[in-house]
Amino acid sequence: MRSPELLRLATAGSVDDGKSTLVGRLLFDTKSVLADQIDAVTRASVDRGLDTPDLSLLVDGLRAEREQGITIDVAYRYFATPNRSFVLADTPGHVQYTRNTVSGASTAQVVVLLTDARKGVVEQTRRHAAVIRLLGVPRVVLAVNKIDLVDDQEAVFGRISGEFHTLMRSLGWSDAEVHAIPVSALHGDNVATRSVNTPYYDGPSLLEYLENVPTDPDTAPIGFRFPVQYVIRPRTPEYPDYRGYAGQVAAGTIAVGDDVVVLPAGTRTTVARIDTADGELESAHTGRSVTLVLADEVDASRGDVLVAAQDAPEPRQQFTATVCWLADKPLRVGSRLLLKHGTRTTPAIVGSVDSVFDEQALTIADGESLELNQIGSISVTTAEPIVADDYDVNREMGSFLLIEPQSGNTLAAGLVGNALTHVV
Image 1 (cartoon, helix red, strand yellow):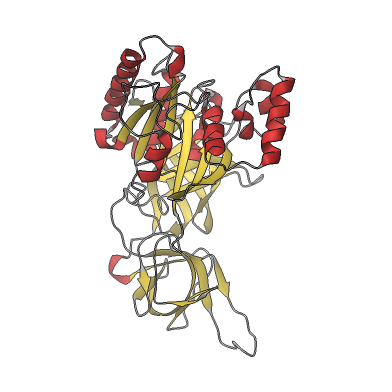
Image 2 (spheres, rainbow, N blue to C red):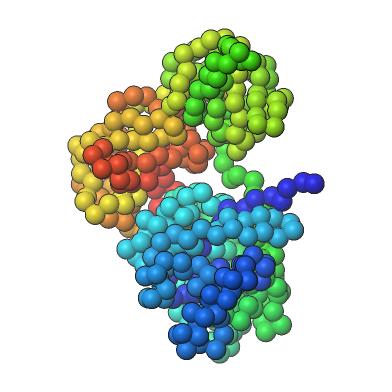
């Protein structure tokens, strides 16, 4: 039987717009919740004086979140329907947790952006839309939540939907990539099934949209990319000379007999075998974890990248990047950090802070430093070359982290290239 197709999605929106309730409703209506979880949520809801289960508690797992009724961390949940499997990141709404939104949406193929029907498109809506655009998320659905709490629902939904589409067009999305749905997460209207309470809306429910939205990556086609994660040398009597390079295909397709180049060294060779735990393959595609056996003995180790010989990128040691600063201590010119790209970690220095992005005015200004949650363009020089594509070409090979050398804490999420040009 064919496995259901996987969709990665994230939720975003302002505080109290109902993200956790919406996710809880999706889990409940798709029967993705165990009976003991429902019992625990029911008991917690009764303790709060509620007559019905508070489905947001299915997502708000941290004690601090349950006590405050807010989400302060990225909560990952998994559910499935007969048509598709889902990995969902429920991200926080507070402005001080914008960094968590960046983390949750960084791998998303679709973002569900919520807004309260009583408030419409607010400052945080614009902030999240700009961040989502920077991250290159190909599709966005606006869930106009709590639609049951407003009068003249059709007019309110039309106004909010129109304003949101105008905002998204200004950020570079087409109307085909943006969809708006009136929902009531509390009552389940238009969440898993279409509701009779919104006769003015004739589109799909949220779940129907998620089941049918295209999942093909919205990136330019590039050749094979394979960061080496581990070199397998069993040295057993059965495999005395076996040398395999394990990792996950980050882009493109590889087949037995294809010519590849080991970067940054530039050594050329041919793929002799493609091994997996389930046996040999003739070819492997993006996202598949495999072990490649090469025709020649080459000097390759963790951190190196195997690429298609006909599409080998030039390794970089100096480049421009867009970063979201995640730390309390500001980023300043001359900062010496560690840069983690794929499976390679190398010392790096910040050569300049070129600009800072104003996500409300959708403008950029000259900058000298980046504060917590700020997004800006910087120049970076690395001690060792990295094999990177621009982020708008390939998200996997165009993303990196900046790390504090002493503590190992993550300081920034970065995108190779000046992604700010796409939103200004």
